[in-house]
Length: 193
Image 1 (cartoon, rainbow, N blue to C red):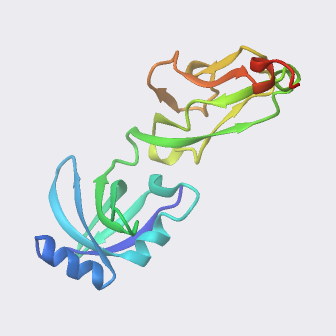
Image 2 (cartoon, helix red, strand yellow):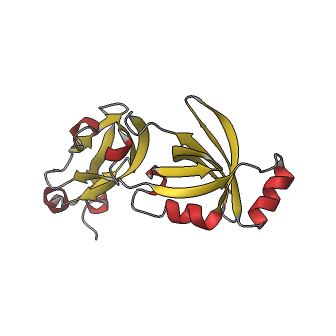
Image 3 (cartoon, rainbow, N blue to C red):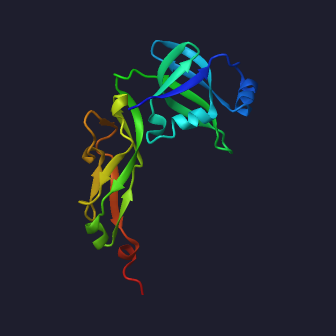
């Protein structure tokens, strides 16, 4: 996985007034933290940050953060947004070791056609829209595909049934239902009059 380079300044003032000034100037306040690193207050350009996480990996992108003489491999772990405008208000960058496993959340995409479910007038119900995975940063998938083709009426797909790429393990209850089926409206109420 290629890394995106992002420039950061470390001379930002603390406090909400200074943070508002930064945001008005097109920057986002943040903090860099991680093993062996004391927390460092930083500011990054808002447009550059949007470009850095706009790829197919989104917030799971590896970022090479250059902060005035120091360089860190980071991931954007927590992004706080303005409650009304939705703009990014603060970012927590976590320093990661490219060779050590990390825990990330990736979306779940359903693929295939559940013909048996459709023919029984039942419906496919996606229960989980994102799963937590443990893997090395270079192996983070953009999404997890769950094939519903073999699903039948009354059946379900559990987390333990999901096929993951090599070197990737799911975190959570293996018996958690990812996809379920339930009777459609016509089946529940009988044929319409």
